[in-house]
Image 1 (cartoon, rainbow, N blue to C red):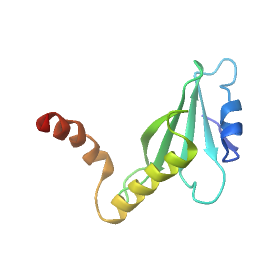
Image 2 (image 1 turned 30 degrees about the vertical axis):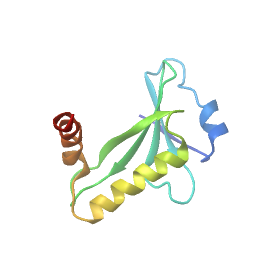
Image 3 (image 1 turned 180 degrees about the vertical axis):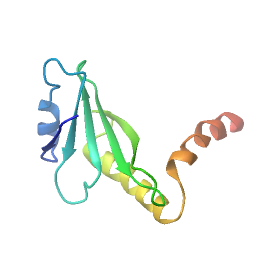
Length: 108
């Protein structure tokens, strides 16, 4: 899957389209503080933020951060930052992600 680089602003993101005949396009977000931040654009027009990272030398994994425009680039950066902090604290955000909905269900 070819990847393209786009500027880190809402207007550029709004203009992104999936190339004709492709199911999905992956766009790297350019700019300071955006390393590993990607936007997947589906042929339906859905745009989803992902952050690609490694935990303790594992293979890179993509963590979904939310759909644009509900999640702006600023919010995607904040969510990415929280994941980076959890990885640096020795946690595995992919493993912990499955526990969050269960914890909410038990408190209700």
